[in-house]
Figure (cartoon, rainbow over the protein chains, first blue to last red):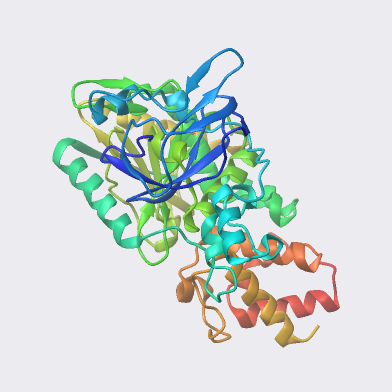
Length: 377
Length: 85
């Protein structure tokens, strides 16, 4: 049972998406787990053949509990960490690589074993069921709801999500000595770049301005590693990869900030495609385990809701979150002239145990500098 | 294609992107972003879906016309009668 957040102690295995004997590849989604954050898709971190399922559907088990075993080429490999002395140890021992998103999934199944069983029991024709699982696979909930007029599974329990947010934010404000900085800069070049970029492309190939913000932030973090990693209460550990968590609002209340893996290595079109996919899935309640476990820093943009600037709260155990407000036309001094220009305010909420304001100011200035030359992004 | 059919197509695509919302009862002049709590990514995805479904480009500069059901319906009707953007 992977840890999907600093406050997660256990999860309920809702559904296996693979069965013993199935070939699995690193990155395949093999199960769905219910947590306070909703239904999370659990990815496998080794390739081989699924051997034994150790946990029955419906069972609630602590973080760190092995879920299954797989057979590799030469030996049997645990598909989850060995049972730890305590759940918290398991959380630390769980290698980040174990939960890293892999290449696009190549799901061989069209329906999970549980979905097939239920379909057989109820006489439901799977050809007539619309799948809401990974890559459109049919999962148990799809069969259960087949024939009803209900809307597609959302997988989000907003009251549970509110409790998870409350726990994480309370811990953040209790344990993390935040400091805040703001930096306003004009973004006419970046806006023009997006307009020009989009004018030449069909809708599916366009980008949103926020993609530029994410890209610039990821590139800037390369130069400021003290804002990218985790603090365990004792010391700060910088992360080798930059996996920006992107705050995504859930309609009706709620928030999630799943990771876009290796954000700094993604060109703008790829970044935009990942962002689109992530937003759609998150709002449908379809998270992947690595997306919740891996963010190394976060970004939040409330520019569409009219705020000038936000003072964001760090998601522990991360140590920094960058916020962006609304782009507004402002009187801006250039040399000795005043011109109306689009101006954006970026803010930083950072952990004073890991960094100081001077470096934070340089980080924001670097983000602003990168956005002045958008063609380089 | 009639205006009612075009409106139904827009409502259907909104439902695909934001299934927890209900656009059927919206007035023609209501701002989709305000009424349904849609953001720029939702509008982006709706425009992509409509463009692919109807088979013509919707220039970025025209997207502002798509933020109400009435505006979107009228825009799509114009484009169907004159496909050149």
